[in-house]
Image 1 (cartoon, rainbow, N blue to C red):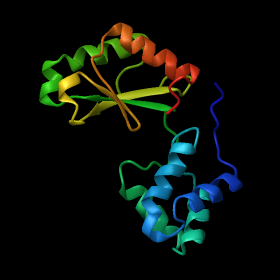
Image 2 (cartoon, one colour):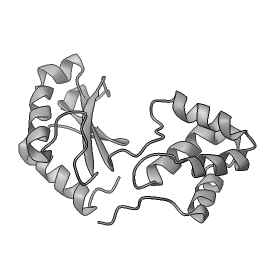
Image 3 (cartoon, one colour):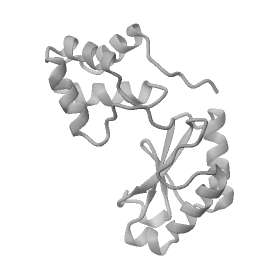
Length: 164
C-alpha cells in the first residue's frame, strides 16, 4: 500500500468545497484534510489555503489547529492505535493489549514504527465497555481483542483491507 505524504492543491480545494467551505465547517474541513493526508497532519501550506478559502487570517486557522488535540501540525503515524484504559477495559486486560502491540510492532507505547505506519497510546473510555478491551483507529472501534485478532487487524491495516 502506498502511503501518500502530501495532498495536491487540487485535492485540498476539493476537500474544502466538499465539507462546506466556510468558517462554520472549519473543524470538519481541517479534520478531513488531516485524515486525507498520508501522515495525518495539516501542513503550513494547507492551513494557508484553508484560511484563504474560509476568509480567516492564517494565524487564526493555525491557532485553531494547535488548540485542538485531535489536530496535528507535525507528521504522525499513518495509523494511531488508541487503547482504551478506562476501568472496565483495565479489568479486561488492556495492559495485555499494550504488551502485544509492543511485541508485534517492535516499539514501546508512544513511539512510532520505523516505517511510519503505526503508533499507539492510551485514551480514556470510548464507550464500548461491552467488547473490551478495545482499540480505536480513527473513528472505528475494534473489540474482543487477543493476539490473533490484533495480528489480523495490523495485517489488514498494512495491506489496505481496512484503510481508515
